[in-house]
Each structure stands twice: as structure tokens, then as C-alpha cells.
Image 1 (cartoon, rainbow, N blue to C red):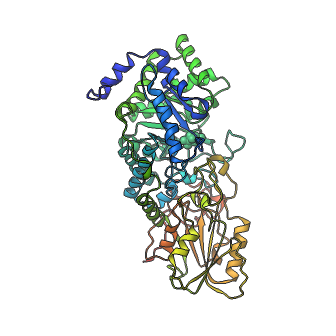
Image 2 (cartoon, helix red, strand yellow):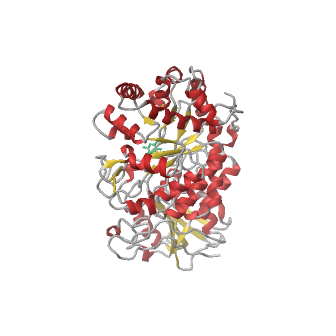
Image 3 (cartoon, protein in one colour):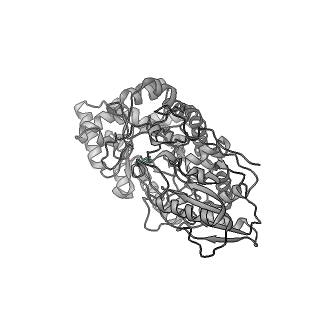
Length: 577
Ligand code: GLC
């Protein structure tokens, strides 16, 4: 408990006092619905998480703070007094908490290409996280999405290893400056699985197989993790994908030989969700494989008792040496000491959550994330137009503009998000009083006159993980019909795409006068009006935009599978100023 001692001394001093049971319990990360604070203390559990949407009864910042602090304070009353990490996916701001600032999902941050902005966003996210007691954020994702049919493209920055490395390192820095442990994920190659290889029968590519290509491993997949380690990352999460014919979670070469020995990673490796038990049909064999491969902490969504019993038996049988347990616990304690979990807890006030300055930062990020892909001399729009017509499913739908990992794991559809601004509201605020704005989601307008400009704000309903896997990422029929009606009743049409990934739009593009990719902008929808009525746009594509499905997957260097040219190359973006 004496913070004047060096961390390494504190680790050895504490480890020497721990029983085998207490060491094993430190290796358990349990979902909060599967345990209560008293049991956390009695057993000496190492960490607790809220999975997507893992909310308290009182779903407010105060309710979250109360719940998290009950677990943390509970853990301090264990025999060793070792506090837990409480972890959550605050991957676009504190998304689970109603009223929090929702920043653009990472793909939009990739489009900004602005590493200083990303660091500021991570620090703001850390501040809102610390206000509810959270000290561990399962971010940044550092996967390189090469196939837009995957449901997790938007959780990542780019398909470019270099941009991902730079932004990922800055995100780690921002979280750590804010005393929140980052989790670089999902080690390794988890953005490049092959279509139709998922082991999950509900999915097509998520949790699938990544080709075990040593050259790509070293030139593409490893660099972002190497940079994160150089930046001081003390946690890495292994993915649910397979590397060739074996689950990454059981791969000693990747986890121990490369991460821990070759790259000198001194933090702890955590498994993802139910990943350990997907290694084999036996919980015992699976647990031994994962821990022997180098996993230090196991995420247990449902059952920690089996885990503890299996590990205790494995040590007794010699299937896991106690030295391996000690190594895992040293790594976990190192992160806990480095992040001050044993020291006085200084938390910002709850008022930082959704604060004005954070929302202003998020609005700036939205503006910088927009990528103008087509502009027949239409943008920027005048604020003094006579009539603007707005249509599309994403115009007045904050749930769609935020995307998943917002209040619920799969997100929300509609306008229930305290403090947020819809894209439509931003447009209404931006124009002069003399400008008339008509809105109809389906583009049905009674007046027979022609509007000066039609703005179609269309996109994808929220989805998370494999539930977003789709054979044809495209604009919905309803939205295409809304665009058609708007085109018939407006002089010129601007299409704004609110999506987690590039969509296949090759056939429709020629009918549009302008196209803006807005990704998943989050709570500050007014950032879009700042650009389309504004004086500058700077965003560029963080990922290659395919022309057809047959071009997938597209390599990190931008080569399509069938050798034809993509619709837009990575780095493309029209400017006006
Ligand atoms: C999920 C995701 C991972 C997330 C974890 C906890 O299955 O794969 O990215 O951090 O579980 O929610």
C-alpha cells in the first residue's frame, strides 16, 4: 500500500503474500450480471466488466457511478485488498451512459487523420469514464478491415497499418493521460477474416479465419500493436478469430513468443468474451490451452466458478506451472499499480459527462470526419436559400447517427439520447430564418414547387459485431425511394451517407449532384451542417471504397481481389474552401 516504493517492489511484496486461490481469482474478468460485489470481495476477483449495455437499474450517470463504486469498494474489502479494474467498451465516448458525449466511431476519426484530435477525444472519454469510476476502456480497436461485408469496420480507424498505428497510439496516450487503462484489440489480424469462415452460425465473417500469412502479420497486422506497446499499452485483448487453423486465444507463438518476448510487452493479455471456451469442447482443456498460450486474464461472461476450479486443478496436476500463474498475476498487478488503483481515488465530477466543451470537441470531430466524394459545384450550400427539402431515414434519427455501442450493445433506433442533436436539427439551426426547410423521411412533399436543394440523409440501422455482417452493404430500398422522390422535387440533390462502412453505390452515384460520407458521427449531428453550409472540409477516405462486391477483400495496399479499380481509393476526398 506504500506508493513510495517502486512498482516492481510492490508487485513482489504483494505476490508473496497471496494464496494460489487469490492468484487465480485475480485472473478472472467477470461480467457484472454474473457476480455481486460481496462475492467479488469474498473470492478476490481481479476485474469486472459491463458488456455492451450492461447497465444498472438506475440508468443514469449517478446510477452507473453507484454500481461501479459498489464493485470497486467491495473488492477492496477482500483479504488482500486488491482493487478490481472495472472495464467497458467506451469506444466512441462513454456510449453506454445516457447523456454522455458520443464521439464519431473510430472510422470517422480515421477520416480526420488528425492524431492530436484523436488524443483529445481519448482524454475527454477518459475524463467522462473516470467520473463514473471506470478505469479500463476496451479501446482502441486496431484491426485493419479489408472486407466491408464485416460488421465491425466502423470500430476501427482504417485499413492502413500506418494510420492505424499513429491514431491508435494517440488514443492510448489520451486514455492513459486520463488515468484509464487502454486495451489494444483485437490481437491479431481480426479485421481480415475471410468471408463465410465464421465459426458462429449467426455470422458470416466476424469471428472467422484470418490467413496465417507471416509476411502480412509482420508488415500489416503487428505494427499497430507494436506502436501501442511503445506508447505504454499495458493491456492487449486477443480476438475471437482464428489464425489459420487455430484460435488466436490458444496461439502461444503469437501471444508469448511475439507479443511478450519479441515485442517485450509487460502488461497483461485478456481474452475476449466467451473466446477461451470456444477453443475446445472441454472447459478444462480450453482453459489450460489459453493460459499456457499466454493469456493472463480470462473474460468470463457467465461462470467464474468453473474457471477457478479448472485452473486450481490444472496447477495441482502440473498442467499449468505456478510460475505461469505468477507471471500472469505480476502483469495484472503491474497495470493496477501503474494506474493508481491502490492509491487515493480522484474522480472528476459527474458534470463532465456530456459537458459543453466535450460536445464542442465532438462537433469539431464530426466536421473533420466528413469526406466529400462528389460535388458538382453544389457544396458549400448558401444559408440563404429559399427552400431546402430534407429526406432519408438518418435525417432525424440520433440512434442511427450514433451507431451501436450506444446505451444498448446493438444501439438504439430513434431519438432517445439526452443532450444529442440530430443532423436535421443542425441544418435547421444553420440556415437563415428566411430559408424554408421541409422534412419528410420518405421524401413525400405535398407542395408541387421545386426546392432549391434536396438533402437526402440516408444510411444503416445500428448494428454491432457479427450482426452487421452482410453480403451486400448497400442503401436500403426505402432510402433509395426517398432519394428518388427528393430528386423529382428539388433542383439539385446532396446525398449524405450515415454508415459504418463504405456501401456499394456505384450505380446510383451518377444521379446525385453531391455525395458526403458522414460515417457514424455520434451525438453532435450539427457538425454536418458546419461543413455543408461551411467554409472548409478536410476529411479523406481512411479505407478503400469498393466499386463492387467482387473486389473484396481489398488489401492494405489498396489492391482489389479481382484487380479492377475501386470506386474511390483510400486518401480520396474533395475539398472546398
Ligand atoms: C465483445 C467484443 C469486444 C468487447 C468485449 C466486451 O464480444 O468482441 O470487442 O470489448 O466483447 O464487450
